[in-house]
Image (cartoon, rainbow, N blue to C red; front, side, top):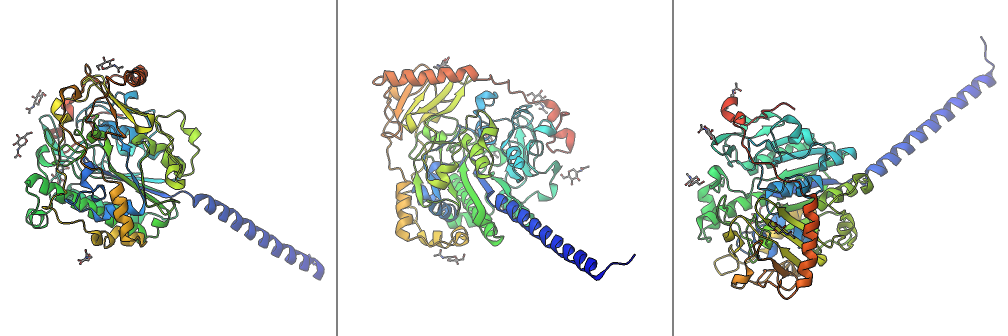
Amino acid sequence: MKFSKLTLLLIFGFTIIFILISTICFYTIKSFKSSKTAIRPHIILIVADDVGWNDVGFHGSNQIPTPNIDALAYNGIILNRFYTAPSCTPSRTALLTGHNPIRFGLQGIPIAAGENLHLPIDVPTLPERLKELGYKTHLIGKWNLGAAFRNVTPNGRGFDSFFGYWSSYISYFDHEGRASNMTGFDMHSDFEPAWDTYGQYATHLFTEIAEKMMRKHNVKEPMFLMLSHLAAHSGKNGTELEVPDDEENDRIFGYIDDVKRRRYAGIIHEMDKSVGRVMEILAERKMLDNSVVIILSDNGAQTSGNLGNAGSNWPLRGLKMTVHEGGVRNFAAAYSPLFQKPRQVNNDLLFIADLLPTFYAAGGGNIENLGPMDGINQWQLLTENARSKRSEVLLHLDEVRFTAGYISDYGRYKLINGSTLSEDYDLYYGEDGRGNSSPPYNINAVINSSAYIAIGKNIPVDEMLQLRKEATLGNCRKPISPDNKCTYKNWCLYDLFDDPCETTNIASTHPEVVKRLGEKLTEAWKYLKPQKPKIVDPKSNPIYNNNTWFTWLDD
Ligand SMILES: *[C@@H]1O[C@H](CO)[C@@H](O)[C@H](O)[C@H]1NC(C)=O
Ligand SMILES: *[C@@H]1O[C@H](CO)[C@@H](O)[C@H](O)[C@H]1NC(C)=O
Ligand SMILES: *[C@@H]1O[C@H](CO)[C@@H](O)[C@H](O)[C@H]1NC(C)=O
Ligand SMILES: *[C@@H]1O[C@H](CO)[C@@H](O)[C@H](O)[C@H]1NC(C)=O
Ligand SMILES: *[C@@H]1O[C@H](CO)[C@@H](O)[C@H](O)[C@H]1NC(C)=O
């Protein structure tokens, strides 16, 4: 066959045009796609365990310096009225489902190793939701939401990778988890026991794993990292507060008289360094520009008693396990360059269940896909300085231990219908950390911290000190009168705006408010699912599995 010159020229011309058009199409589609994906920020959620309100520097105590956490807080938004449930499993249930734990019967005391209790299989979790949006999801550290069979462990519930422990706490060095009379090694890399990590200090180990994970992460994909610390739970035997080096600890924190609290300070110190390291790596990998970092405690400190850690909720009243402020009003701060009005103390009412819809919205998800939910999307509060969409919160309702708490009127009133397991937990505990025995607040250490340097903004010292002042509660404590002991027979009502220390029970002078909030509790009873009995299954005993905790039931 022969082509004329003209035909050849035409074929050549069309080919060129075709190539040009397809190239343009390809790049248009590609840039459209990447502009769509660019809005999905990396989400880094750092969860501290049993850390008290007064144990971060930005709430005004000088006793335990937390320069990295403070740097994050001053550069971001201090969430000053952030509420959780009063203990770990209920709090983390709310966090990971966006629902109130009473809907699933998980309102009781935390799941112990060897118990066949877990998140409801049919309720999507936060990482499952974020995976829908294309996120890679990782949990490092504590789970405590069930491990009887594979489908209920972190790997079964939406985390692409897991490194950590399934039970409520372990020892810091030998990673031993306990339940009734059983003990076993509980450090797992996905489902494999990580025996080679035996002896490594948990906070260091988790930070190292987080570092490796972030270095491996393809930065073009959105990442959800939940770094769920053992710090500052009590460790070995449920009583020991373990630090990397006792002598070094005494040298740094020798000014703290109480040895237990001195060790607690060391645990916080290591966690604070971890926060700095995470920020450093995010910056190094150029991920920080498109990240949201949130740090919070799952519940208040257990200053003394069972699993006591010498943490301090000063000046707030009550310990972990109570619905008094010390148990449920927790330190929290969020940082992101995406926030339009950072460097502020936000006093709006927030609840831990809000994080699921908030993160889902952050990732570009349509909130309507989530269906009805107790959690409320607060992404506009963070990014656009909008007001909280929350006016009330059910803190807790425990039908076994006769405990309930409800906050209403945008955070003003709290009704308590029974407070705790043990009346002792309702009192005032914890050191104020403000006396002469502590060194003065070192703002230079904040400026010098890894987190501050990673963020790379210069904030005037006065501004940081002003934020700290705004985030600090003065000593509002008063002796507790007999009518101010809250049982299900003697209800308490507080005006938290005027009385954050819950010194004055105003139930008798505000019967209409008591009635209104009582009705709210009655509503909640209607959807409460009763708790299942807490039974430790002898078949779970680690002695059957090389002294290591394992999933002992079939899916
Ligand atoms: C552990 O406790 C259970 C009951 O809680 C008991 O049946 C079992 O014999 C105990 N095992 C050991 C080794 O003491
Ligand atoms: C272990 O804990 C129990 C209380 O649970 C306590 O009585 C005992 O002294 C502790 N042992 C050590 C070595 O701390
Ligand atoms: C108050 O608590 C008691 C004990 O749990 C319960 O029987 C009662 O229904 C509660 N009332 C309300 C309104 O929640
Ligand atoms: C700043 O950090 C460096 C190294 O981390 C340290 O040597 C120095 O003492 C710190 N300065 C202040 C004021 O904390
Ligand atoms: C049993 O556990 C030890 C660590 O305690 C480990 O070195 C060993 O490989 C394990 N054995 C088996 C058969 O898995």
